[in-house]
Image 1 (cartoon, rainbow, N blue to C red):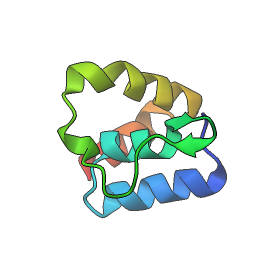
Image 2 (image 1 turned 30 degrees about the vertical axis):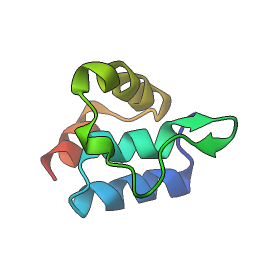
Image 3 (image 1 turned 60 degrees about the vertical axis):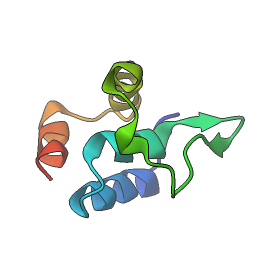
Image 4 (image 1 turned 180 degrees about the vertical axis):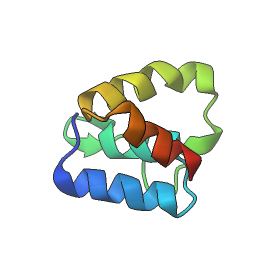
Amino acid sequence: RGLTTRGKDELQEAAMNGQGFRAAILRATCYLKGKPLFKADDDVGNIPSHLTEDLVNAAIELAAMTAAEVDELEKN
């Protein structure tokens, strides 16, 4: 699902606090039947990237994030 304003704030905060951008955006956007797919204690960062990269790209598109926003969050 796309990001809410709160979700975007939470994504930025998580990325700034060292969670990692890809894990943070997957947590913020991946839902199944209205519930988050990933729990807070799931180690999303250790899922192989070949399994998550399409999800990450779709999440970025759904979030309507600019390339500059993505670059800034990936730096953290």
